Image (cartoon, rainbow, N blue to C red; front, side):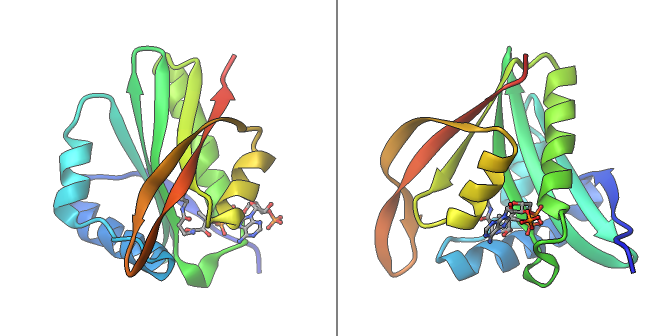
Length: 156
Ligand SMILES: CC(C)(COP(=O)(O)OP(=O)(O)OC[C@H]1O[C@@H](n2cnc3c(N)ncnc32)[C@H](O)[C@@H]1OP(=O)(O)O)[C@@H](O)C(=O)NCCC(=O)NCCS
């Protein structure tokens, strides 16, 4: 059966669902999941937009981005572990690209941990290129912090 993903804006009523998705996705990476308050604070900030991907009654994934002048940043992308490798993140990132371009961004940046090769492959496949490195950028629960690569996508 084919996927029936539905993409919507992330709204205030979705905060618990988004926080649940974030915890499920990030805690296995030894990274603290965001709370509903974390996400509410971001959504209330200037230039921030969020997306929630569903399929029937299931929450599949979420993404949050921010535009400041002509630069945008992917703040997070998270997919339910039970629904990985079905194109959900690709769809969320395509929505992010369309949104930030419409909002005037010419470049989209993100950071990805050195211990996250799967996400790295995803970004490479979408055309992101490495633009720098931040040493010890990501705190990890119970193990040393890891470096982050800064990646950029030129939106033309
Ligand atoms: C990274 C993440 C968002 C990918 O979500 P996903 O919905 O499974 O990704 P997609 O199905 O859209 O993948 C698209 C392509 O990206 C690449 N990719 C995605 N996950 C990958 C993995 N674990 N290993 C290798 N390649 C991967 C593949 O090229 C894939 O295409 P293919 O399945 O046809 O080979 C998901 O694994 C996740 O939520 N991880 C935990 C949170 C996280 O790491 N977020 C990003 C932080 S920077």
